[in-house]
Length: 364
Image (tube, rainbow, N blue to C red):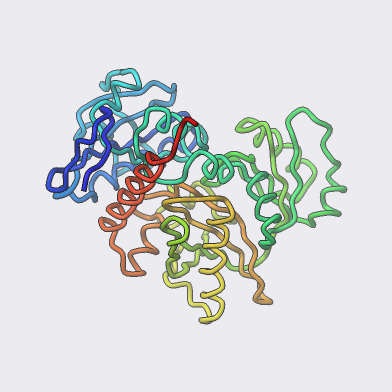
């Protein structure tokens, strides 16, 4: 088998090792999460098949080069983990000049939102995960939920607000969504900037916070029920879903601290302990959400399971965390696909998509 390389020639022949650039960091509030994910992918990748190489993006947006073994420091401490300050700045083409495929393990804006995916497409480099359209739609929770509604998929009640417009009064929001309700930035993940609101003062403060991260904010109804997650892998029409897992937060909700800083912030229950019919429906809905948003490669779909058995789609994450406590790889491992084999499959999917796109005509 032959693969396309960043240098512009078909250079990879089976038997040699594919050079994988693990791209991480970025100008995002989820920067540190990305570092944790990248370190795990770097440690777990099959070195019999691949030559991994770390490529960092600083919080200031600079692309960085350094020694792989010392690129990420304090990696065992999620509160102190950071890029080694001795790394040197390089231009983008230099950073990507010696890779055959990129694993953009970036979370949040400037990485998971289609920006980096568009750059890699322009540079003609294969990459893991969703393309430009699905990345952008999956990141913007307003657009995502409008598309899911159009596909007749079950989502909760919401109101979208834009920065500097006249906001509805607290009582008006309560009459539409109930109390409590959630306020969150439209384009952010890992529960950054998310608030559970019960009072008018909390409403005002939460909007101020949300608009520090994005120009749109979502107000969403509080949906009591179990928090269920399902991992998805593949590309249409060959898409698979994992067994579902359950999140039981020990914090008030599944906050950033509960996800990434507090090892005891939540219990991950795998499998979720669901009736067979409910588990099957969640797996089916996960694939439906994945396909409705034109996703490829991987995603994690999050649900609320209400007491009456009804299922509500919360959101999709097109580049879920790969940290040591992340649900996405854990669910696949419990479904029979190891962390290392999962990385193999994601790289295979990236190459297959790239080769398919290379056969498309670009002129009449």
